[in-house]
Image 1 (tube, one colour):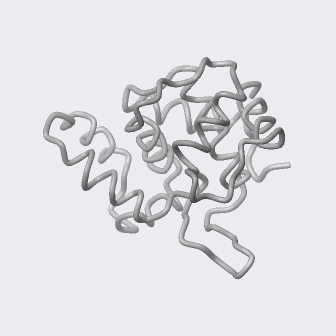
Image 2: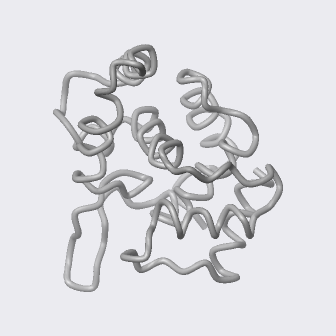
Length: 163
């Protein structure tokens, strides 16, 4: 059970957000829905740890450092002006910076998609849940993250594909 209806989340937030920046399509949408399921269960907007709250924010559990790094080292590239403008158009003025990913699901989705977009890996096939799960672990959760590319997480990506 999740906090949000996966089908509505996919159609009403993820697909339009990715289309807005020209990085959509079935594979990307499923990857982003699966990532949100793996990271927050579509329930938590602040990282919950055994000792309290961690630094990760929003449904995609993006850490402020990652958010700020995308702006500083990727979106600041003048060759990406149109992409940066599209990302900025999804933001509001408050709250500032990385805290925007907590209450602005469109912006949070876009920033999470850019985390994948920066990686050299091609997107997995649109219906390959196992490959999506492996990509999530390698690119998004990283070797420093607590997530694992196991049957439980593969099932989340399969759920994302079927939504």
